[in-house]
Image (cartoon, rainbow, N blue to C red):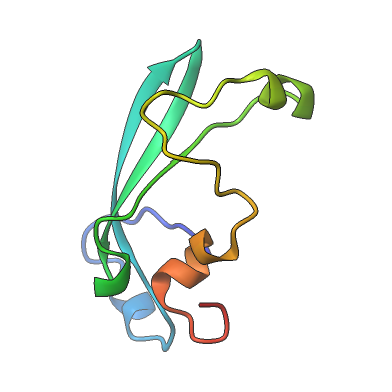
Length: 94
């Protein structure tokens, strides 16, 4: 899965290609001195309403020391149901 940010009109050649896709809105939230990226999925229909947050840290130790924010339900990093491909409806991946 690749995330691309294109100017309006430049996406037409990619949309013509076969493959699964998803639509999401992206937000940024500051918490615990970190920037969390929040993705709210709008499509495809099975993924609509799914909200995922991600954060990057300088090391695995720094990431492990970060507390799960109160607004986060659970950790899903290792859950294959929450990969970009699975959320896009990629049949072999879902």
